[in-house]
Image (cartoon, rainbow, N blue to C red):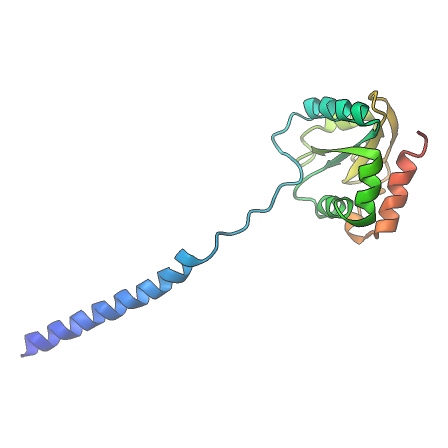
Length: 168
């Protein structure tokens, strides 16, 4: 009798533990997969090849190229991307510019391209340049004009962008 009571107690403990384990596992198994954030700056891209493609697109569309130097870890870079992707900024950018986003990593990638274009990264990112569709530099930011993009309103960002391509 003691063996039977012990066996039943053990069996019910195992069943309870198994049910508890199933409940603990079930929500995780049915939970949606975590959302992976889309990277704004392609960390594996060949920036010079992409610049050539952007220039070709700009020539075909009769636009200029906006080269945005930034990084995926940079909150201001991501904020600028969000601002330029919606609303009045999106309309402004879409009508006039082909956008190329160039990853600078931790200031260890594509800094030579930024320097060649005339963009200083010393005052922060995002830093941008407008190129004519023939590749010549129209104007670039060098004073951290967009380095606080997350706290800038759309009008302030628009003013910076308009100032960069007003000469064309």
